Amino acid sequence: MDYICEKDKCVGCGLCSIVCPQNCIQMEYDDKGFLVPSINTELCINCNLCIKSCIVNSSHSKNNYITKYYLAWHKSRRVRFESSSGGVFTALAECVLKKGGTVIGAAYNKDFTVRHIAITSIEQLGLLRKSKYLQSNTNVILNDLDEILSSYNTVLFCGTPCQCDAVKRLSHNNHKLIVCDLICHGVQSPVFFLKALNYMENIQKSKCVSIDFRSKINGWANACTTVVRFENGKVINRRLNDIPIGSAFLHNLSIRECCNECRYRGFERVSDITIGDFWAVRDKWNFIRKNGDLGYSSIIVNSEIGEKLLRESSRELNMEESTIDDMKVANGPLWKPIASNPNRHQFWKDYCSQPFEYIVERYLKVDYKALFRWHIRKLGRKTGLRNVYYWTRGMLK
Image 1: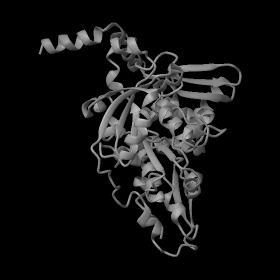
Image 2 (image 1 turned 90 degrees about the vertical axis):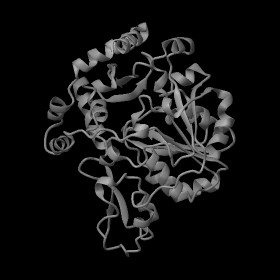
Image 3 (image 1 turned 120 degrees about the horizontal axis):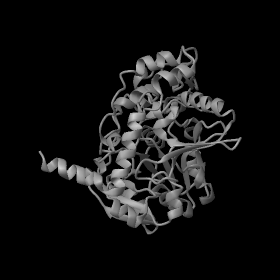
Image 4 (image 1 turned 90 degrees about the horizontal axis):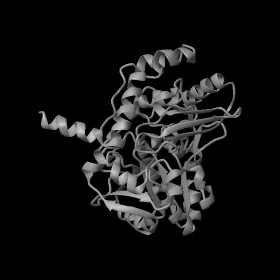
């Protein structure tokens, strides 16, 4: 056997390597820096368990539950400031940890690659907070999943929808497991990420010591600021769009090919609960002035298990019922395919054959026109002139 599923549809979850009885499948980086299964054909016994288990080769099960939608934000301003959105993940995770459970989520390694780890204390929650914007390696945690489920009364797993599907299948829907997926734009190549970070380090002539893709030092509503700090004290403080890592990601150049047609987009979720930003509130500036420009979360409850956890966590949250239409506002990745970049094929061809400086110059330069339009929109939201513009445009039709 040479392949498990079509390569351009593989999500890199690693489930096939876990279920293989011969241990003949290893997850390795391809030429673009994405994890893909590599099969040792000499050890393979053609049992086809990997093919049967692969989440790409079969439809995912959906919860038979009437979905509920909420706008929410954590009551603690500190928690909201330290979170990417409104701090809902912290409330859910603390609830599980206080009951003696464990929480599994994405954390940085020392080299700024990302892996899923399990934590058992509230003090460790900072490791799992914040968006990482690259693909996390779940191999180790999936290998340990049975042991984790047998050791704790409750396990909360948080990840991308495809990772959540893999975990649910591997756990056989164990009653101890609660699965929380993220509203996901796509996953970026970890190897590309490291090259882009190294490019920035060379410019600053110093090693990176921290990176925060969603800092709220300039607020949340007008897009968070990316802050990169270096050993020599230098700091890069820009929009995510205006650094190579972010530009490649947001223009759908460096994301995994399967993400363009992700089979998990939509409102029939595989998880118990879905969280992400609540962008529909972004233009309600009076609401933001009253409650703070520190982030707001969308919550989609997909199962009775998810509803129970949210109910137990709700004492830490401000919550308002919402609608499917509000969830759709500015959250395209939740419910529709993201646009495939026509330059993607050439981008990767050049990436594999050209110096990284060439990649930046050709594909990832700052778009100053877009930056100017962003500043105008930002001013319009704060002053209310944006609403006047739309009202006037409607009157003149």
